[in-house]
Image (cartoon, rainbow, N blue to C red; front, side, top):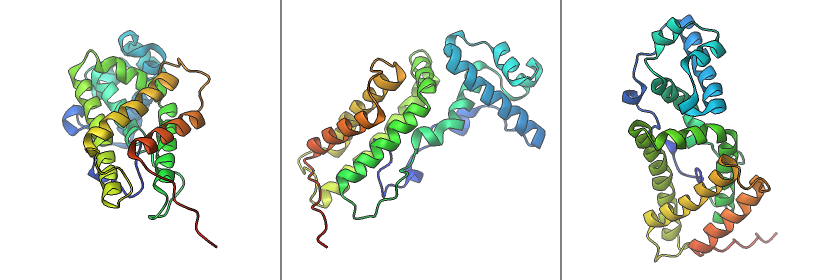
Length: 230
């Protein structure tokens, strides 16, 4: 599940840290443009060819830059993939809820809106998520980054579950962290199979939102709020 209403994403650790980033960022407008062009080109190549098959020469050709320009800003393919993930981290971690909900909104409606934002963001970034999964299996640097992403979602949703329990709305016998771990795993695998691996091509965002929301609500023993009397 993505960001529930009332949860401050500033509490989450960044997906990419300064240590992950490596080299210094450019200080001139031209340098910023050149580095940005390389990062945008790298995303195109990584999504097209995957991490293992992508070549630096393809990235520089896509960016219309020289190999020398590449090494001005990046030392390796790993470093530029890190930059690609950093550029996408806000959408991957904090897709946001497009529809603003009041603080006293039905918790199931909040969960539904959160799921919609998550699945829509995953669909936008599906090819990049495939690359991220691929490289996390073989590279400890990216595996640690993926772990931080998962931890952000777990901590965020554990706080929300605990809040629902404190308000007497969710099953008080559930451990918030373990419940978030289990339910987030379910939602993440749904997105991975439907949009990453494209194994369930007949499933839409609406289908996934409906199913994930019902399972979350059932697991937490939530009930929809009665409509307000006019």
